[in-house]
Length: 520
Image 1 (spheres, rainbow, N blue to C red):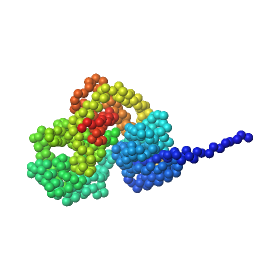
Image 2: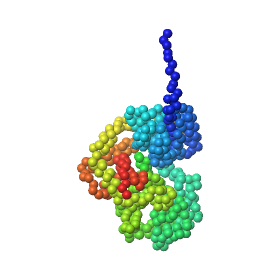
Image 3: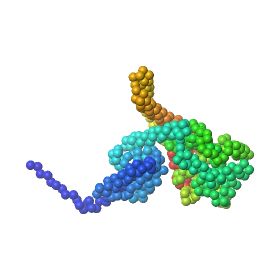
Image 4: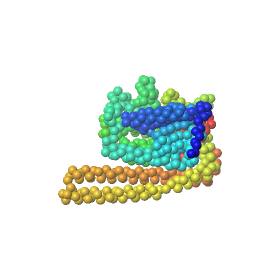
């Protein structure tokens, strides 16, 4: 008989080996009761899961509730966990799935790579993926891409539902303008605020400037909608708000395929509902106030909606604060000599709400020139591979899916015709017909929305392909920039994200974001 020698574990070695500090991350996308119960379950699970492993030490639980997962910048607990990793407080991270960690492929890969550089791995339970043992990022990229696609599909379905409510007038307004309160989706006049609205319109018609009106309201300590100070731009926005005459225009803004919100300048259909709620201002006074504002603009050479008014400077409306989401405004600073700088609108209102201070205009110019020169110099290594990848995206599967949906829609239509025939000949009870017909109509509606969603995703990919191609063509032929070029900026940059006073990101129209250091 063979002998088996049992070797006892080295107790001294095990005692000397430090335990792995393990943290968990959880998230739910809404703050509904069911979702919060799910979050509590996740919290309980990970506390037990980590503490049950003798080789692990519980390093904390980080969770975001009622927050979207499409952008990591909107999840404070996730960012806090990353910061603790940077301070060497965490060795290993566990989370439920890729879709809970990130629904944006770029964010997911960026975070995993950043953590890997610090020697920290992530374990995704549902997919059974440990980034510390992965030889390639291919599988993670594919799965995070699927999660991003799921998020896009959900977003498209939500958009479709909202648009239907726009069209039939059943959309409920969640945020009310100054002068109204939102009660169960209805706009109800707030008489105390309504008096201020009437005063504003009256003073505009009397020839008083917007700045003077704002100063008077501030001197009287009358709070604005959000409890802050009145500004001329705030009043200008109120004067043009159709809700004060009882109308409502829906879809004034929209989100693109990258979940960035834009003002609707005709890219999407708008929906006007007249006499939607009780007015505060008469239509005659409203139209007269518009004419007064437009006349003042003409006198200053800033006629409303012309190119000079909308884009007085290349960076106007393009600089976004990465800390609070506010837009940077152009200001003239005087400290010995005058110079132009940009400052976050939230910081201007309250330094407690946003701590990012002003940034000189010259710093943005220098950073842009540096970024573009890097692209011009390294376009073969950066842009060309990106273009190849976009061209290599396989759309055959999507086209097959569309063909399959079309076939199902045809079958659905045939089934509806059969139901009508059976009903007219008296072979089918009316109740049964109505129920079957409703089921078919709902199925057809679902298939049509699925088809539209696929088409939009394909269109988004084609748009990025076109933008990358244009940027590569420019970088191939261009010489190094010696100074800021406003036309080049408008052609290729979507917006600038300010992470701090030392780092910004240029979000290009082709879908990539390039970071640069600021020299102030």
